[in-house]
Image 1 (cartoon, rainbow, N blue to C red):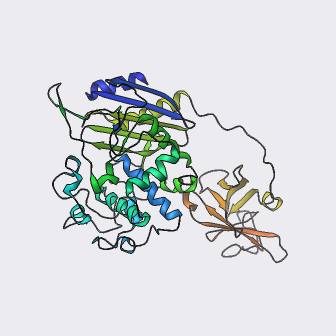
Image 2 (tube, rainbow, N blue to C red; image 1 turned 90 degrees about the vertical axis):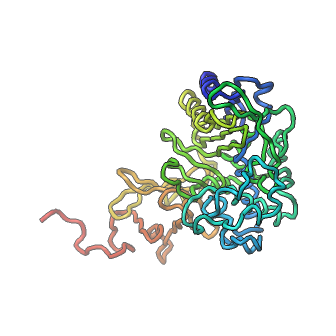
Image 3 (cartoon, rainbow, N blue to C red; image 1 turned 180 degrees about the vertical axis):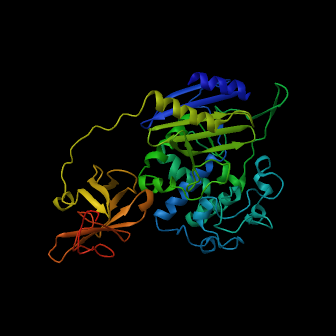
Length: 441
């Protein structure tokens, strides 16, 4: 891992580079190359990783019932000129908004240059019809930051500090740099010389890329993205953020984008996180939930190192060298007899499935041989179950009983699962031939 960091700093020609890895919620490794006083505690600017923090604030509003993600923006933030766009579309960069503000380039100019949303959005705020495609938009996250301010009655920065940074103990994540912090540099492409980059306060654009943070704080945030934290956002809401909401464009990989997080597939591994850059800095954060490994890379050069690829490499190195230990098997403390009676084989037509009860209180329906559609299901108060992944994500599983109370079949989005394949006398769509099973004449 140290060798990988050293190669990246040297070949990337960056004055300093920090790498860090977290596992089981703890910072377990950090290293640096170049001029870094304290690898774990030195602040770097993290650019668009800021967007994920803004997304968490928006999701909190949804969970508190203050915001409908699918309602027109006009309901909450009138007068923007893009009022038909929804918060969900802005979170997933599918609202059709332009990628950047009108000139001058917002990342190298003071926030006062854009004193209101009209100056951020310009005369042509939409580049595409809303909801049609993924188109990365910095201006969209400015709207989300303003939405947070409007619904909270406080500034985006105040909400960020009170609702995320304080509960998660991220005391070294700030809007403006607090020593020790790295200086942002541009490295000449044809000579080993430097030019200092400006570090502007971005004003209204802050929710898209303002933050400064450290390897320690970002590893803590990466753990939150994997596990959730009831003080900030539930495990289920964080899982929703990690669910693909917009497909990637051709050439952008196969991960897509969730609600405020980038998704990637690397060598069979699903990574969740975000990259970031502002003049003088690049940053990358990835976590593999399945491997329980998160990695952060920070560097102080405008271009050169590839922090996202490097962070993905650190995750891979750890996951391959020290595979995650499975949780010890333990018997359930108790189980509902009626639920236990539903376990075992079920048949959709001639496809064999097995239903089992999981230790977390969910049930799982998986094909027993060959290809098939499986899913986990969470219980609902009305006695039905909701699919959590795969083809049946969001679909409802119902237990259908006969008049005498015995179980007839399982209904899953109109698919009927019976105890025997094409069981005579049961609710098999299309009926069962009266002659029953037979040999070939």
